[in-house]
Image (cartoon, rainbow, N blue to C red; front, side, top):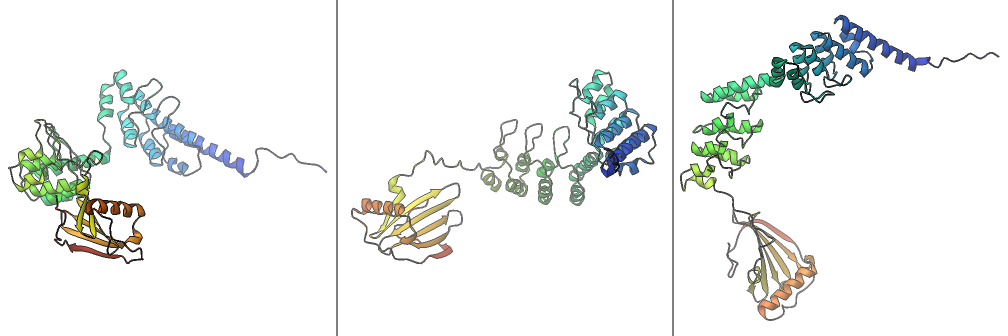
Amino acid sequence: MRYQRRDATGGPFWEKIRAEMRNGEALCENVAKGDSDHISTLLELDIYETDKRKALGIAVQKKRGRILEKLLQHGIKPDIYIGDTTPLHMAVEGGSRKITGILLEGGADRAAKDSHGQTAEEKARANGKNRLAKFIADFMPAEETRKYKLGNKLNSAIYWNRKIKAFELIQQGANVNIKNAFNLAPLHRVAADTSGWEHIAELLLEKGADIDAHTNDGSTALHFAAQSKNIDIAMVLLKAGADKTIRDNGGRLALDYTSPNSDLARLLQPDPAPEDTTTTKIKEQNEWLRIDEHTIAHIETMPALQRQITSLFNFESAERREISLNLATKAEAIATTSFEYISPAALETAAQHFEKIAGQKPPAYSTKLGTMRTYTLKPRPQAKGAHNET
């Protein structure tokens, strides 16, 4: 029986490899010749990434603008390294502003460095191509350019008090952080107006306007709202998180531009500093109060939450009533729990304080299961001997 020798490079796998190599060679050949008719078709075939990068390099060197655009549109990244350089550096070497622009529009990284540690801009300046270097430094992609132009129109619309036009421009994608020579942004402009721009201010913030952006003199939108006495804009800004502690270059807060005792001045008052619970300790006599012969109360205040919590321990009825009082609304939530649900440590502490305050041990209390009842937002009763609010 005669055996045939099997070809090690036969079969579907190797045929696929050879096809990819042929496709890559054809792509590079068409790019070099400037034949753009078959480029798109070839890019749909299986091609090695190395051949795609090689084709991109050839397009840059040969200054094939249309073909370069096609290669980038098919997903070939412009930030690849070809040897020790990038396509952007190659474009600078060739001195082509057009090819440089196509690469930048395609997302080429201006910060990428070649083997000499130079960016493309630095390479251009080193080779005396200052205009090309400035072009790279100032380049703005088409979409950013569109937003920039819309941003200029937005500033004009605000200046001429055209609110509907301003709304349309923001919705179309205008750059909401565009600034003039004085670093004045659209949000500063609407805050400086006397009234009627609060909805535009909300939209600007929704689209990413920098709420605490500074002008050349250090003013923020909140400073402008204070100077124009526009309380509606000030409320919008504060609701969105504007920082009222920022001072301008003259050391003034937004508050300093308001009339004393005005609503706007009260709105811009600094927030009280949160209590330092690590150093502040409520005195024992204020923590525990005797309500009657069977009841004591433990009181804890949390300024950061603006809530006051009171635990009433009634040893006769074997109940603990917790009251969470909202100091701002004067409403309270009440939950009544039997001693069955109180930790032994808390109950023991309460009993010890009862004995200390009353001079005797608390009445015997039951440990039978109780019921839990919850009442929300009840008017706070003015009980005799109740703890005074602070």
